[in-house]
Image (tube, rainbow, N blue to C red):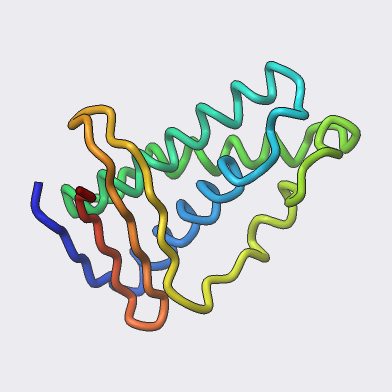
Length: 134
């Protein structure tokens, strides 16, 4: 796989950042403290956000059905009893407060290709990069 660089237009930048915020929300929480059903829900939602990000970078297509799923999932999480979400550092209603002021880098394992990847996003230049790691 070669390195892929995308320059995001205004619409794609908004959607890409929403997916990235949701990914951070679903993956960067201490979900081990949540009950098993919520852990599974966070894990699956994080996978959908990851798929949305990688699919966009590989195929230059933001899958709106993935985005719709994430929006519905966020609505569901916002409606949950606050006591269930108490262990979370970032609550569902705070996800939009996540800001990208500098380049963000995420290292992930791509199960389809059996290799590590890095996703880099620079909000100042509206660029997203997907690159294989050695």
